[in-house]
Length: 464
Image 1: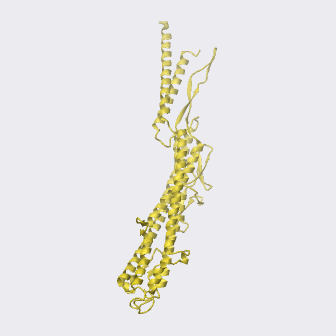
Image 2: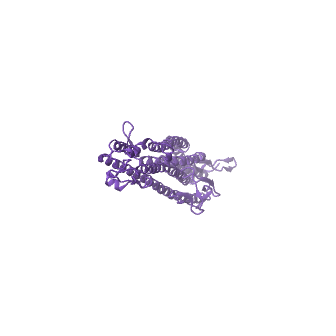
Image 3: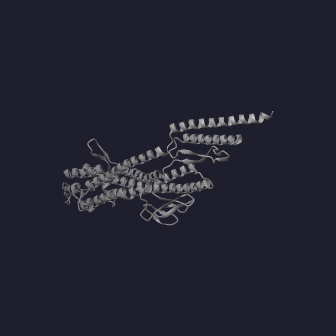
């Protein structure tokens, strides 16, 4: 027999245990909409029995621990898939911007009405019109105007693609700053978890939830490797370089220019170059140095080829006043292509004739107009229009592929998130059921204490 005071203590332990269980259920309900929260459960354990002459007698219950319901494998998979999603999202954003930079617009029949394609077509068509009437000043004016429009479009597209490269460099720097902040946060949480769990049998569940959120945020930026330290902290490394060791940030990400104007990554202290394979870092670099760089290179190759070919044909020709030797375009690439200022000021100087003093001769005009259908060795033996169509198609194909992969990736991520939610998510029905159960147990424990108190009162009053 325990005795009345021991029984009173039994009831008190039960009261406290059920009260704590109610608090945990309330904590779960409060975080029902917190995506980074893992539901917690109270583990109740039988108190040590008391040895009596009748044998071991139970002494009630106590809270052994408060556990966070997590699947470490799912958590790790989600961090990995976050990196893949981050990479594809960064690529999609960059490629969409690059596609917009081309300024291509199509009418209802699919014919370009703006952008380089339409300007190229207009340029060659104006030379064809001039060939039909070589002495017509209005036709010469149209040639100059269309050429100026084409040159301006080349410059605008190149400037937008150059600006996009700078923006992606800036984005990479911003993401690096965010990643370094996350490394500091994770190291700090490692320290807080170590302090909270030191000398305790339980886990710092809420701090561990916060750390998992930070790991997933870091995962969207860069793929990293983890290991568990001696004190239980998460160690982080990228490319073999340790960035977080237990409670300290041992290195940081840093952007640097290797001399190409294309910022890359390295470890700030170790100086080791880092080549991320997934995450926003990788996606930004892949898009910038891949499809977007190829697109800009193609635009400049087309502009260079056009300048060289038109000038080669135009130079030996003759203007209405008999002058010759003037280039039609100045510049060498899409960056600086322009119509010769002298021709822009006086279209009569356009050298459309192949014979001096023959104003009606159209030899040069016909030759330049025919460039529209001539394969260019410098462009891979295809025409100017075909090379540009291939460049536009290439960026479109890259964007389509990335978008499809991203859609598939989001499906995988959603499935993993749903699977984790079924394990770690808060169920309102389950929590309300637990609340009712623990409330009844709490009331019953209180009734036990009330009964024992009445019995004690009776015993105390026996001598009166």
